[in-house]
Length: 172
Image (cartoon, rainbow, N blue to C red):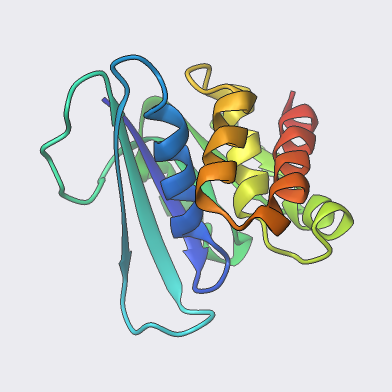
């Protein structure tokens, strides 16, 4: 089972990204996904976590992820060196930041700038989903695009698909 842990703040779309990843993966033959959020008081800006579990058989385990294959930070203020303990051996952290991080387990991307250029807003959920697609070989751009078309309003399709593609290229 592949486990992805999403960190963000209320309003940044971490749970939406977790759901889109699950929807994209579920398009595969024998692709099963489970996505769910974990947050305290429901307010914009509060730290939240979301989870995506992906497997080739039905997923019955609905517990939170303690050690992930990929841990994704939509907001660098939530990141600390303690984050390294939440990934499995060989796991990766994808971090939205303008600042360099000198650790081979951490992949950085300036998602805010890409989001502002393409979306017109600093919302990085689909940016970070695109960044994940560059390092997680089990998901293709077209699967993500289809998930966007099935789960987002039509007026958001083109810009978010373009954001995914731009982030993928930025990480590659």
